[in-house]
Amino acid sequence: MKAATLIAPERISVIDVPDPTCGPREVLVRMRGVGLCGSDLSVYRGHRAVPDLPWILGHEGVGDIVAVGAEVDDQRIGEQVAIEPNYCCLQCEPCRAGFTSACPNRIILGINAPGVLAEFVAVPADFAFPVAPHVELADLVCAEPLTVARAAIRRSGITAGDSCLVVGTGSQGLFLCELLVDAGVKPHVIEPHEGRRILAETLGATAAAESDSGFRFLFETSGVAAALPPALARLAPGGTAMLIGINAEPLGVSSFDIVYRQLRLLGSLIYDHPTDFADTAALLDGGLSPSRVLQAEFPLAEAARAFEAVRTTPGKCWIRLD
Ligand SMILES: [Zn+2]
Ligand SMILES: [Zn+2]
Image 1 (tube, rainbow, N blue to C red):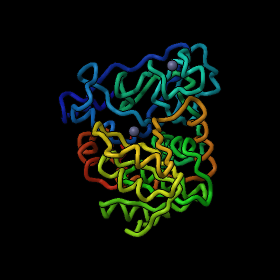
Image 2: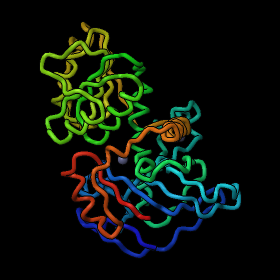
Image 3: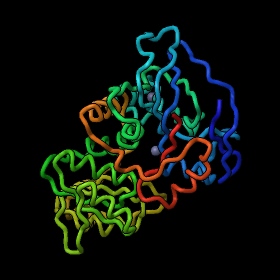
């Protein structure tokens, strides 16, 4: 089968690799779409080391089940599925408490295990989530990053009618905006890039004016350390800041800033198995249309061009395999 592989930093080649074999508790998925995001880009650029080269890229994969292992119900053949690309161990203490995003043994597709940018992928059956057949491929392919955004919203405790500021409207910020609007929240956004800001506005967000403040919630998706202190200053006393973007730089916030204004500072990493992905499948079934965030589509043969486009495209790039 064909797969898009990294052969050296910033060099991608679509090559023939052996077909995967389906283990007893696995399903074989014929891939139909793979979304690209910032973590793929850090692998592509060589900032995140991978175990081997050539390395099959990609973690946001969807497709159809075409075969199942001996211990899997063969009724599942034909399902369209979204793959949860973080295989938690389900044995460790965080996993047993349902906090699987904190699992220290996580297998991460495209990062420490081969990715999904291939014609076929074998996946543990419990990590292939069925999505109703009427859901369009372009909506389905957003399932993974949508689940990241949704888990951050769930963990924040925000509810309908709350005021909220979103910093950064890259694809994660855009999915957040769409989900917040769907949940009855009208997000204000800060985004210096005009194209991204306009996209957020088309999803129902409002560009924040200099004077807008007193927000109950803040979602920080840019990962730019310098963006946080001025955003925190716009929170109401007792407000909640949810950090999603990641950066190694210190944040430049004092305990004075946090304690006097009694802010809550939280971090949100991916999602917890299996409830968050199951919730996303239900949302897609219910008619949410995240495909508005997709802005550029490429065939597998043009994977190299697709990765180059991730840098410059407002919204999301994806690779269509069907
Ligand atoms: Zn991603
Ligand atoms: Zn675990």
